[in-house]
Length: 438
Image (cartoon, rainbow, N blue to C red):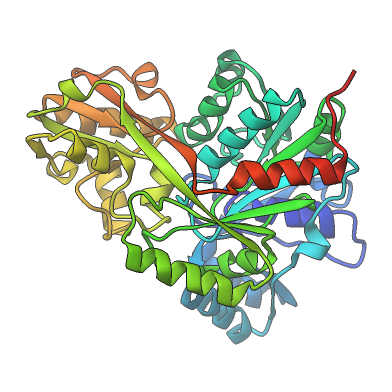
């Protein structure tokens, strides 16, 4: 059971070459337009010459009974505990075992030092932290390979192994908004990004040109590659999320360093609550603070104006946030009014608001497939506003034609307090005896 990421990886490393198992199907959730397709033979291996069907998760009970399924493997992330047990109950009720594969069975091994960035929820600030860290490492002369959690939403066979070094690479791969949100800022920072589906091949490619691998996780998943240093972010804007969502609590228990993120915008009481819970769950990890610095490209174009705010998609949808950095930036810039996009949302966008009723007066950047991207454009163009405040990390203006100006919001990690992240990274590099290549 998955969302075109962890499920594919677990299959590749545990079941693909196992003659004692027959994988009947993948079930699909979270990702639109992937059910009804097949995991291709080129990735599924010689035991699956016709590939493996990908079916709707809603068919799970029927599928278990029809195929006499012995085991259901749950393999996606950032879902609350009640959801996990609901799916378990469906499997158990149909007579199957319900299984969660752990890190020891699914993490790949490499001789190249690995730093992993994970979080207890989507939207804690993994990407900005990994960008900051990559810049620090490059300043020390190290060759850094960023390996991203998978987002294979297009042609699966063609996306087995991906390397992105320039914006042209994103165009050639027909990347969605969701992929661009993760890749574009890294390319702008000078990083090379690896992603795809077959992470054994991806890792082999990255190893050849890197002194150090930086794993940037997706959602709140644990790493695909065994880390030498595991950094995990918790979010005081969502106190209580340390122990509410799978597998965020497991990731927190694995951490070497815990970053209490966004301390510049959270209440002291919430920072204290999250810190106490993190210490209770993982008493051996180093706790440090970090901030998220939010900045508008041109605040004067927003001041006193009617604005529509576009936010990073996953943070606002399954990340559970009512709004994000865009709403904060527009408020700080003293926008006259933040217009609720529901007033003009076309059908495909309205369906997202119905699915995620917690969303506030903002528009999540959605573009998993061309029709959804078109729906985003139509919704934005229909809004009677002066300016769009865009906090999606990708360049929205370059992707869709809009009839109104866009002001971008940028947000970057910064250390807070003494003995911050840089201090502990320096110690790690010394322990690993890492030096730039000759």
